[in-house]
Every structure is written in C-alpha cells, then in structure tokens.
Length: 481
Image (cartoon, one colour):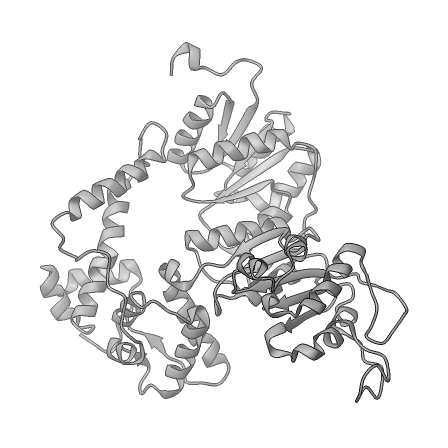
C-alpha cells in the first residue's frame, strides 16, 4: 500500500474481531484499501475492551471465540455504545445464526466465506445508518428451515431482516420449495409469535366462497348462512395471515383485499360495520404475477401492496449440497412419527444429487417417508434410489474431461480473488484437496454400488486408507465392505 492509499487520520475506524488470523489479515487489507482505519482482535474480551474504550465506528465480529460467544455479548456492547453498528460474520451458516445476529442487534449478517466487496458495502451502509438499535430476543436452534447452501443463506438473511418488522412479504418460488415454512418462521420468530398464524390456500377454496372465507359473513348473507361466521382476518387478529397461491384469488376478492391493505378496515359479507384488521400479511405464489397483470387476472395496485419485500425460495436443484442434510432430517422425522429408522448409503446420496427434483423439497420428503416405510433393512442403497427416481440429470461435464485442470484453475482464481491481494488463508492446500477428494470418493462409491474394496481399487489406494478418509469426511457406508 502506497502512502497515497493510506487511510486519512479522520477516517472511520472499523473493528475486526475474528479468531482466524487469515480472515483478520484479508479483511484488514480490504478495509484499508477502502479508506478505513482498522483495529483487530481475536477474542471476545478484546472486542469488549475496544468498545469500552470508545474505539470503533463499525464492528465486524465473528460468533465463536475461544473465550465466549460473540452474539451473547452483542446486546450489552450495543447498550454501552448506542448507535454502534455490528456486522456479524460466521461459518455457522444457519437460519438460527442469522436471526440471532439480527435480533441481538446486528446491523447485518454475512455467512463465511463472504465476498469482500459485499463486506465493504455493508460497512459503508452501516456508517450511513448509525443511530437505530434493535431489541434482543432469544432464538432457538429448532427452526424449520434446513440448508447451508449459498442460496439458502440469502433466504436466511432476508428473514432475519424482516422478522422484527411488520412489512408485507411476498414469497416467490416453485411448488414444494417450502414457502409456508418461511411464512411460519417469520411469524414464530417475530413480535406476533404469541398470536395466531392462519394459513389460507386460495387454490383450495371455491371462488364464490373466498370473500366469506377471508372476511367472514353475517347470518342470512347468502343461502345456507344460518349463523354468523368469523373470517380468517378475524381469526388471525394480532398475528399473521398467510395467503398462499395468491395468484388464484378472484378479482372481486382482490379488490376487497386491496381495500384492507390500504385502510386497515373491512366489512363481513352481508355486514355494514367496519372492522379493524391488525394482521401481518405474508403472501406466496408459484406463478408469474406480472404476466397475470398483463392478462388482466391480477390487480397491479394489489401486487405492489403485497410485494413490499419479495423473498424468493430456491428450487432444490439449485441447492443440491443441502440434499444430504434434508434427507437425514426427513428420515429422522419419519422415525419420530413411528416409521422404521433408516439411513442413506453414501452412493444413494450421490444419485439423489444428480436428480432434478421437479417436486422440490416436498418430493424429497415424500420419497424419504415412502422408503422409510417400504425399504427392507436399515440402509437405503443406491439401487433403491435409482429405481425410485426418474432420469437423473447429467453432470455438466464428464468426470475425466481433458479440460478439468483448466476448470479447477478458473475456480481457484475466483476463490483467490475474494482474498484481498490474492493471499489465500493458511492451510488452503489441504482445504482444496479435501473439497476435491469428497466428490471423488462418493462418486467412486456410487460407481461400485457402495463397495469399499472396489472403490479403493478404483482410487488406487488400500482399504485402510479409504476407511480413514471416509471417517474424516463423515461418510457412512453401511452394509458393504
């Protein structure tokens, strides 16, 4: 760094707290190039000391330290320095971590590995937004969403940001991606969690009954209305109303819904008295609402009222790295529900990751429950999975493509580009080899039907070496030698 590139004496100071020396180094270099002064520490107590001394305009903090949990002390640190903005970075990329970070008062949350440009942008935003403080609330680990893929990390970050608010949310995504799970998570983690969560599927209600279903009706409002009936808005009072398949709502009902969103008031079918609606609206659809607007089947003004915060759920084929964890979760859930306990062979998991999953997570769950009930023995093998699934999706390139080295080189170049001046973290040679070794072993096991002896022969190693590598990667191959 030249003298001209050094931060000025009056530049903002960013504290970087992380127990990984490599991360501290690359983040410090990136922030200094962006014009900030930087202080670093590798402990939770060191971070607390800097805050107590009045150091820092923005904090970048890891979660796990040798001397404590960074999130546990976060509310106290912010209470001492109101308006201090904290950006949490963590390798524990779960929804629980994202929500804990946000509700402990963090300004933003970035899962590791993160893009340095995204980090510097977050720092700039934090400096612009100094002043507000979030309330802290405990969040458990028993949350309904599973996945550590980059696609799910974006979902977690959005959920964490909207949970404390009352903003209307539009969840977009294909059928079976878990849109209702997201709606429930937003409700359960938010300030309305003690009030009802009411879900309404527009596609499952006869069109002529939707207005009565949503807003209720008075006695005698129509033929068969023998008594007053409360609608879903009234049932969800103080809580959350989840409007699933919103694209199937008739235009007349859309007009009434728009009026509620605009005024916060509605009348029952056949009624004249205005009623207040204190509910949070979360809508969802698997349709392209803009096309419905163009064809006159959906109101444009209602779309903008509902689409305040769009949240897109990724299809399962876009996050195949989550399939093993999801499958284990569904098998465990099936066992809890009384079905025989089963586990997947490693080779079976590889086949599942090559399938396109048109039914998404719902299809995966149904498959796991069916196989838990019907498969003989304790292990679900590759042959069983192959018989159940339709044509697997081919890999983008053959395993022994002559350009494989070039593809790996390009990938590593992008990876290195995320680390300042191209300086990788310590031990990155072993990390890269492990990343390549894992699919190499699992594919070899798949090719040999789970036989460790034959897989070892294919890989050119002895059986004991393969066994050690299986243990190191946490790969379980049951019933085969």
